[in-house]
Length: 487
Image (tube, rainbow, N blue to C red; front, side):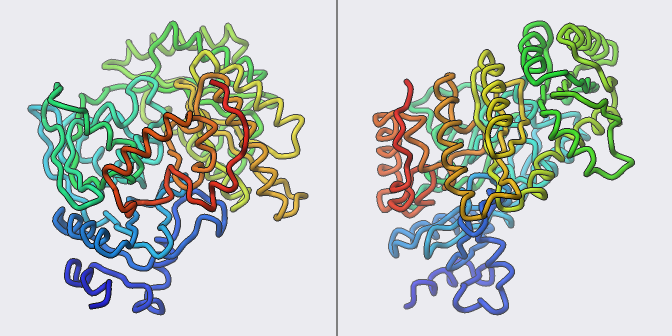
């Protein structure tokens, strides 16, 4: 029996085998060879096969097969990740969860939902809206990402400053281990100290410790009113200083930062009807959102936020409640990463470093210094409310393509070292994946890394589940920067 014959028995027509179907399936093979990490061909690898499970038992049998054959398996949600965590291992099989996409239950009595991992986050929100509920831990890419991927990455987003990241809302999961056992962790209960907290061990493990096949998510009443302030500041430093005071004296649901040049260029790229009338000469912009149960409460918070903004030399461009006001401001912010992608193509890097809130001004100052004195343009934006910034270096037009990777490596090594010095770390929401694996030693001590590897070996003794993600492969390890890590 050939190795893939067993997959045919398990999955039937829900299977693509590269060697057998290459000519007719070339588009699918290319789609499943990458995620949204960019980096050109460096993070593209066609899988040997793609499977599309529809029930948990198939996932368990897949992992049992992988342990018998030694063929690695890479779990995949929507492929919207930004760390190359869904790029298949050499010779590996992609396990796509797109057909496990049922909302199994909306439990309004317990304020919980039970879903399969392939549910699109926005589809869950749409289903919850008639019940007056919402899933508060969703990330910014809610219109494309899967709930299972959110949990695997412990994804965050703009509203994490008030509501926390995905992990805060996951209270139960059915998990298939790397050796093919099925675990039922947590459930519809708000307290559980029965043994180790295995559930949170799997949450955020980037598909290296287990595969989610069912999830129990806590939901809460949907805020009736949202309101936003969109404000310009003369310098990035002024905007960064304003963030701390907004957090001390108000309760925002989001504080988003965009550097001035990036905001202007993104705005110009929008259709004319969607553009803001941005005043010239701003060094940075903040989008500050508040939510609550009535217009008067949110309006009072907007007024307080506007006063704080003006205290820091900010000029309020827009302020108001309601869907039109909020969606227009968020439209500009959400288009920033797409502008970066269109402008730089494969020659950019989407970073998501995070620092303690008190270190935000220092991080912004560091980036601004490198924007002005370095040879690499940098787009700076992100979730200022929780210290999670997206720092996006882009290859300048004059730089030769072959010079880009060494220059980027030097910049990222310096950036990560500074972030760790400030008490932060190298990823706040996108994960380590394959992209940052070679930099892990800059953020974690040898003892910390070895403890994680011990857990990985215990659960995945044959290293068949997403090998090369988080922990560098020998090829990546040889390129690991030799920089001492401030502790």
